[in-house]
Image 1 (cartoon, one colour):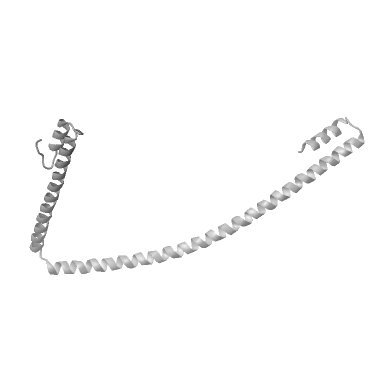
Image 2 (tube, one colour):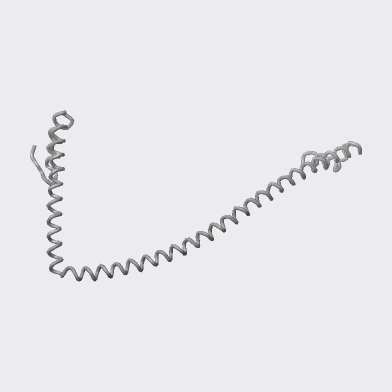
Amino acid sequence: MTRDFVFVKDVLDYGCMDQEIAQQQILKAIEGLGQDMHGLKEDVHGLKEDVHVLKEDVHGLKEDVHILKEDVHVLKEDVHGLGEAIQGLASHVDERFNQVFTKNELTDVLDDKLGTLKGDLIHLTRQEDKKVIALVHVLRKKEMLTYEEAKQIFAMDPFPNSL
């Protein structure tokens, strides 16, 4: 209720004013209600527009979901096809592998390869160890490392050294 309407109600309830003033107050309250109704109509119109926009958005989302469902279906078919292709390739590789190597031949080849790999790794690790040793000496000369810190670094694995 607007303030004018409450005032008019009080006037009518208690008879505080003469008839003409009461009528003027009632007219003023009615005008206020008319303005309130106009504002409500504008609000309702705005809400209707918002609902229309939301409906359009929902329709667009439904279309997007439909497209995504189709895409997922196509992807499922592709994945199924890939699975079959991989299975066929695995079978082919197994056949070729069995044709090329016997168990003993494979063991010998793998032993040789692992030995070579181990040697390569040891060689690379020693090269890196030489770099660390050189770096410790440089830092020691620049007094950025104490003797004890350098000694601890040299004592570390894989190739411990003494200072």
